Image (cartoon, rainbow, N blue to C red):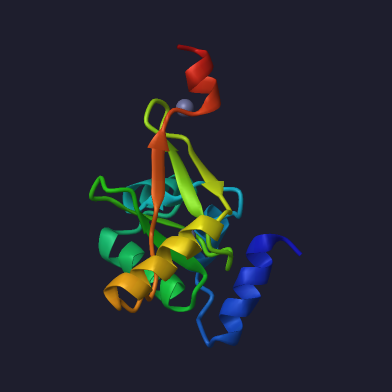
Length: 143
Ligand SMILES: [Zn+2]
Ligand SMILES: [Zn+2]
């Protein structure tokens, strides 16, 4: 089954209506796709032939987020980005030259930092968000 079919059938099980917009949105969030801003999402929807207003897109995104199909990320530029929720915790590598976004799955040392925070600050951590900014391999080569 195509990834979007899997998501759509799971969505159905949560009692969600499978509308045209919802189907297109799920297609836009392919597993290999990059985190997208609301504007980029709306742009892709309109390229796919569906003009949807901001309010509808936000409502749809909120619905997908609530059902844990997508997650929200912030890269500190004031824009929220959305990506398919892989269910696996990861961090992003953002290239400041070409804006390419990569993912990294490594959290061992961050676990140690969390332990320190709990011990030293008695702070109960619920989650963390950590993104890396720099220059990707191909941009570094071309410089
Ligand atoms: Zn780059
Ligand atoms: Zn982490």
